Amino acid sequence: GITHIKDNLYAVVDDKSEKDGFYLWNIFIDSKKGKPLNIENLGFIATPNPNRDAEGIAYLPHRNTLLIAGEKDNRIIEYTLEGQPTGRQSIPLLSKRGNLGIEGLCYDSLTHTVYAIEENNGADSCHLFLLDDNLQLIDTKIYPLDPPSAKPKKKGSHIYGASEILAYGGNLCVLEREVRIPKNKIGAWTRTKI
Figure (cartoon, rainbow, N blue to C red):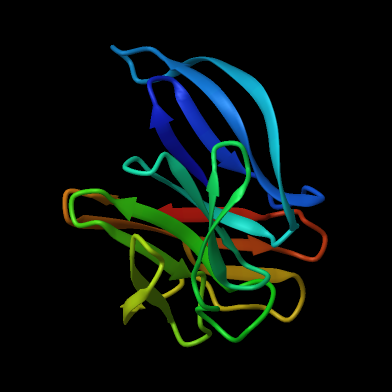
């Protein structure tokens, strides 16, 4: 997950770090072509919490804080830009642990709504959670996924579901992905769609 903070400053989660946390990056983009010109890693900001398999991150501009969604515990925790917990956190949004939990996270500053989406619930759909900006659950909806283009095979892995979401002006975009990795890795492919 990645979120814009201001100017060239972005925050990026790291699901493999020892601690829950995020990197701060300066990303310089060509304003005419929209392509990155340079990326400066400003370092990792560790929080006091252990790694929660961070998948999603969102910026709350009115509080200058970051929200991080952990797939391991399916909670959203709010941190300062220095990595300190603010005390605000959601209830566990799902009871399952590990992969296929909360994957995408975003904030719509127009509606003051936090959105979190489950990767896949095993039934060709995902749970989409709507929370207020104090991380109180408002509603849960079912987001139907497009059917996968391939059937899972016995050997290798097949990943299918929502990987990221983006809110803008009361609208929501969902990035769906499908990944097939054969046991021997040859012939692997990925398909994405919005």
